[in-house]
Amino acid sequence: MSMHRKTITLTQQQDEWVKSQIGSGQFGNDSEYIRHLIRRDQQAQERLAALREALTEGEASGNPRPLEMSAVKASARKRVKVAE
Image (cartoon, rainbow, N blue to C red; front, side, top):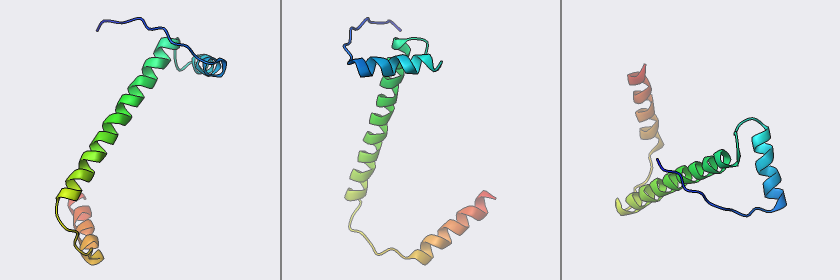
Protein backbone atom coordinates (compact mmCIF):
# COMPACT_ATOMS: atom_id res chain seq x y z
CA MET A 1 0.00 0.00 0.00
CA SER A 2 1.49 3.32 -1.00
CA MET A 3 1.42 6.24 1.38
CA HIS A 4 0.51 9.80 0.42
CA ARG A 5 1.61 12.83 2.39
CA LYS A 6 -1.12 15.32 3.37
CA THR A 7 -0.92 18.63 5.17
CA ILE A 8 -3.73 19.50 7.57
CA THR A 9 -4.43 22.51 9.74
CA LEU A 10 -5.80 22.12 13.26
CA THR A 11 -6.94 24.55 15.89
CA GLN A 12 -4.84 24.70 19.04
CA GLN A 13 -7.51 22.74 20.91
CA GLN A 14 -7.57 20.03 18.23
CA ASP A 15 -3.77 19.81 18.22
CA GLU A 16 -3.73 19.45 22.00
CA TRP A 17 -6.33 16.70 21.74
CA VAL A 18 -4.27 14.80 19.16
CA LYS A 19 -1.18 15.17 21.34
CA SER A 20 -3.10 13.86 24.37
CA GLN A 21 -4.19 10.80 22.40
CA ILE A 22 -0.58 10.14 21.42
CA GLY A 23 0.53 10.81 24.99
CA SER A 24 -1.90 8.18 26.26
CA GLY A 25 0.21 5.58 24.48
CA GLN A 26 -2.57 4.41 22.18
CA PHE A 27 -0.96 5.94 19.10
CA GLY A 28 2.66 6.46 18.13
CA ASN A 29 2.21 9.67 16.18
CA ASP A 30 -0.27 12.06 14.57
CA SER A 31 -0.54 9.95 11.41
CA GLU A 32 -1.55 6.81 13.31
CA TYR A 33 -4.29 8.72 15.11
CA ILE A 34 -5.62 10.34 11.92
CA ARG A 35 -5.64 6.97 10.11
CA HIS A 36 -7.53 5.51 13.09
CA LEU A 37 -10.16 8.26 12.81
CA ILE A 38 -10.50 7.68 9.06
CA ARG A 39 -10.98 3.91 9.58
CA ARG A 40 -13.67 4.60 12.21
CA ASP A 41 -15.43 6.98 9.84
CA GLN A 42 -15.28 4.44 7.01
CA GLN A 43 -16.79 1.77 9.27
CA ALA A 44 -19.53 4.16 10.41
CA GLN A 45 -20.36 5.02 6.80
CA GLU A 46 -20.54 1.30 5.92
CA ARG A 47 -22.90 0.64 8.85
CA LEU A 48 -25.04 3.61 7.82
CA ALA A 49 -25.21 2.36 4.22
CA ALA A 50 -26.25 -1.11 5.42
CA LEU A 51 -28.93 0.42 7.65
CA ARG A 52 -30.28 2.52 4.79
CA GLU A 53 -30.36 -0.55 2.55
CA ALA A 54 -32.24 -2.53 5.20
CA LEU A 55 -34.75 0.30 5.62
CA THR A 56 -35.27 0.47 1.86
CA GLU A 57 -35.80 -3.30 1.72
CA GLY A 58 -38.26 -3.08 4.60
CA GLU A 59 -40.23 -0.31 2.94
CA ALA A 60 -40.33 -2.26 -0.33
CA SER A 61 -41.41 -5.52 1.34
CA GLY A 62 -45.08 -4.64 1.31
CA ASN A 63 -47.75 -3.39 3.62
CA PRO A 64 -47.22 -3.86 7.34
CA ARG A 65 -49.15 -6.56 9.17
CA PRO A 66 -50.27 -6.50 12.77
CA LEU A 67 -47.64 -7.89 15.14
CA GLU A 68 -48.71 -10.87 17.22
CA MET A 69 -46.51 -10.97 20.31
CA SER A 70 -47.39 -14.57 21.10
CA ALA A 71 -45.96 -15.65 17.73
CA VAL A 72 -42.81 -13.57 18.31
CA LYS A 73 -42.29 -15.12 21.75
CA ALA A 74 -42.88 -18.64 20.43
CA SER A 75 -40.34 -18.09 17.68
CA ALA A 76 -37.79 -16.79 20.17
CA ARG A 77 -38.31 -19.75 22.50
CA LYS A 78 -37.87 -22.11 19.54
CA ARG A 79 -34.57 -20.41 18.58
CA VAL A 80 -33.28 -20.67 22.16
CA LYS A 81 -34.05 -24.42 22.26
CA VAL A 82 -32.29 -24.98 18.94
CA ALA A 83 -29.21 -23.06 20.13
CA GLU A 84 -28.89 -25.14 23.31
